[in-house]
Amino acid sequence: MTQEQIIEGCRRGDNDARRALYQHYAPLMFGVVRRYVSERAAAEDILHDGFVVLYTKIGEWRGEGPFDAWCRRIFVNAALSFLRRKSNLGADVDIGDLPPNRIEGVRPQALERLSTEELKRAIDELPDGYRTVLNLYAVEGYTHAEIGQMLGISEVTSRSQYIRAKARLAERLGITKKNKQNNGEG
Image 1 (cartoon, rainbow, N blue to C red):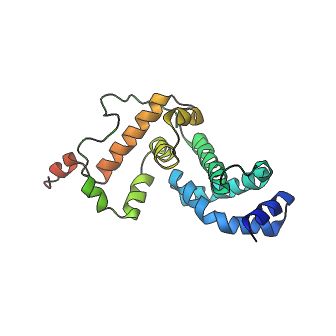
Image 2 (image 1 turned 90 degrees about the vertical axis):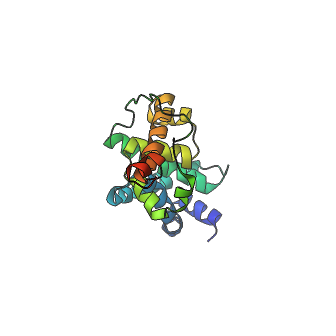
Image 3 (image 1 turned 120 degrees about the vertical axis):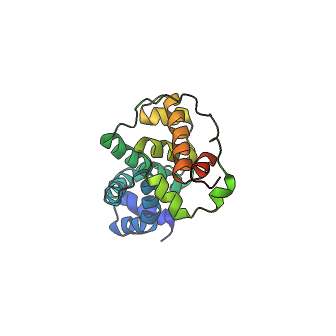
């Protein structure tokens, strides 16, 4: 079946089309959800909930833009809903003296030595708020104003959480000069 046939079948409630849609998009959307939620069981529940929403709302897709992007938005929103219920994503954070667009002392060559798994693990270990803002801004491409609106936080809080997420990642991954010097490697 083509993508158009699958979508049309889902609109009619055809279970074969729903199965085909699930088989095609589940791995990709599970990856999207896991960027926001580190617990596998919770991510599986969100994936299920996201597909229920997708099947329910598929009639609303007008063919404007890629279907993949429309699906991704549903699953991101499902993950954000879960995180809002689970924790306080909107806690105000004072950005203090953190640099606005960079992390002091990051060694770019250190990033090249990281494996994908090391980076994923470090991102999973970030607090929910940091991880969520990092994903929405750096991966999904939302602005801090849009993130603030989505999460019910200020734009400044979104920026602050993004800056702190980058700093925490750099520290965790040992890619700052400060960390290297403290370990006698600098």
